[in-house]
Image 1 (cartoon, rainbow, N blue to C red):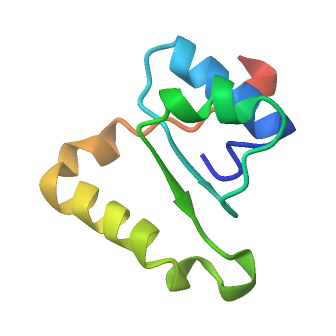
Image 2: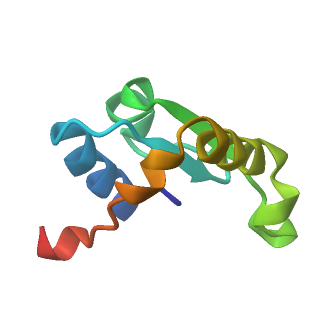
Length: 87
């Protein structure tokens, strides 16, 4: 989840976690409001990236995507994109 630690993103992450999904948050690395205690401990992981340098400059994110794609190609068949507003 990009921006999973802010006001709106943390609510979306909360819904995904309640439905049993494992969630990684990608953000600038700052946890806001109560997301440091409400969201952060429940994440599978958190990756800090600087949006001014682009996603390809975020080696940790690129590595995660590559490793999931190589080790579990079936995952891409089950990727779910959801719009929390319609859920």
